[in-house]
Amino acid sequence: MLMFMFMLLMFISGLSVFIMKRDHLLLMLLSLEFIVISLYLIFVFHLKMMNYEFFFSMIFLTMSVCEGVLGLSILVSIIRIHGNDNILTFSSLW
Image (cartoon, rainbow, N blue to C red; front, top):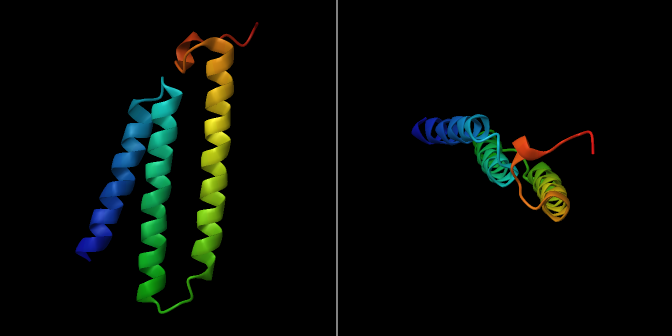
């Protein structure tokens, strides 16, 4: 039970960082990855407690890696166009 509470605290702290640091894209991506890691730990912990197979956890990891790569490619393209990752300086009318 203590382990589940720790994983839930990880998820809530990642979510709070995501909400508080919404002006920089890199910090948002890092907090999203932290949320994905905490969800993966909760998922594996639940599968282990219920004696299920871990095959679906590999699919979850594959999708989370694809999400991370997509976020990094968007970050690189935004930095190349605008020069920084500050979301407040973007203009949608250019």
